Length: 191
Image (cartoon, rainbow, N blue to C red; front, side, top):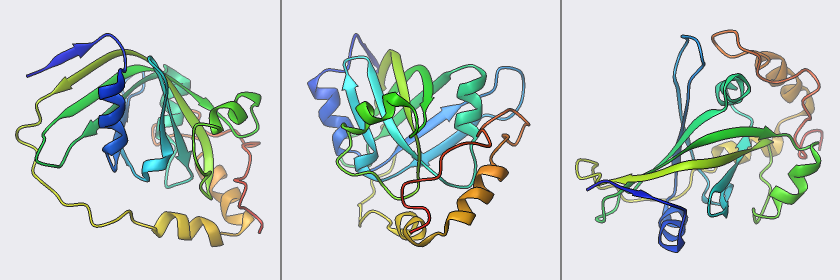
């Protein structure tokens, strides 16, 4: 059954590395909506050390995670095995947003083999609780492939579409501040 771990050891790193997707959960401090987002592309998640992880945040439909992290920093990342070996792993911690124009971004970027078109930021999480659960009720699924749709969209998106997304994502759905008006465009914009 459930177990709590003192750090992200090799066996946990191996488990994380085998998962094709993960989920990110955040919530505002005072009421509002809980956000739960599925994330894909295996090469967008990295374990930086025994208590720190990061993922590449891509431009998408909203900026709830960023708004909630700016509000209180609370974040939970969940990995869920859909193979015959059932397991759920949750990483609880405090997250922060590292924009591509932040000096720290270049150091974090070294943990990712490629930088996807449409990269908005890196989300860095200082993990303070690591726990797994059995996942016995989670169904088996067979991975066919990663869905290339978001990458394809970002590779051909014009710069002005990102300007509109940034404007639309200046606040969360609950009105919390999210993206700043000077948020940098992704490296692929304006090709």
